Length: 111
Length: 111
Image (cartoon, each protein chain N blue to C red):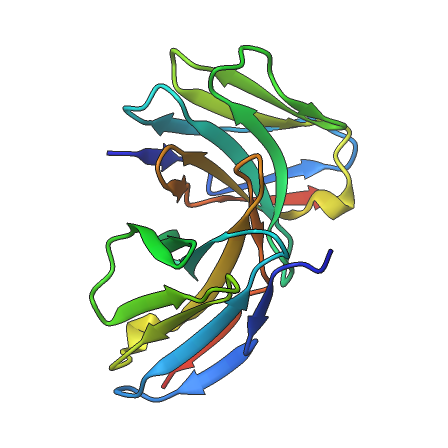
């Protein structure tokens, strides 16, 4: 099976812009979760989707949003970008035994 | 609140030695899962080992084993016969309704 894929892999934006990141889970996986990884804060949970419904949400401002499509692909959107949003954004799909299978991540740099 | 604490930000050991990474967690749930993930430099995060809280037997995967102390809420990872390829960031994680990661331990295996 193909692994989790994320696009784009690298992104450079300026403050105030918005960005959309995409994630395709492993075939057959219906749950997708998103994480922000920074050197200072580590891995922080953003949100989790299952069958197009947000099941859980972390402690991030409303500028961070997401959605899941009927084919389980997911997107996350960050509006009004701030310098502190620079991070590696990881997507993971959930296997049958609850483990997360991670994608390679999208590295977002906000200038 | 669900928390995961890794008290060792960085460790170094010689190749072939045994190393133990510490992790403590807190959860109010009785049914939960614990994981160790490995993130090699500039590479994808992968699952090392998982443990269901209801299982008393410690999980083992080849050179990787855990010491799960449920009453103490401790979940340490032991790497035996360490190899250069074990150099990575290691994250402990717990999942009840959502997955929470510790801040990670950077492990260096020295030749």
